[in-house]
Image 1 (cartoon, one colour):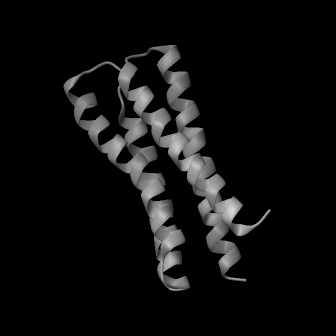
Image 2: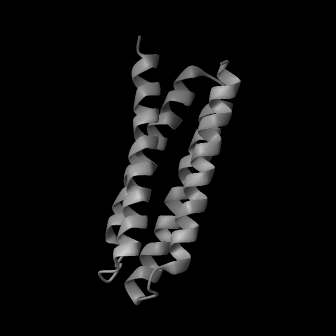
Image 3: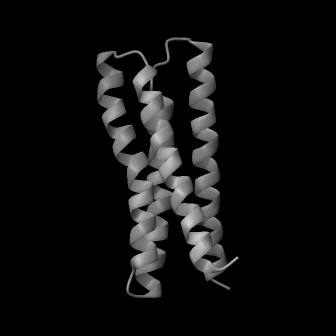
Length: 120
């Protein structure tokens, strides 16, 4: 598999993740805090893929790595907002949120691996 294929797979993974977050946002209780937290959750979940695009389009290796670090940061911030969403004890929502948190951990692991590999 060439680098272009890998980049495309990672981009698609980030896009599907952001779309899944938006779908989750459609079914959570619309409390005052959830409305505010959801805005940030949606912003940061989309920013992961945007940072990855910036990394793949960066003019040099250093800029690319800075953007990959940004991917890790945006992923961790997304996890934070996911954990703040009030699911009001709904087990179905808890399961969906847990799936999103696991997916965000997978993304973070991918980006960390890219950073580790770039050092060797």
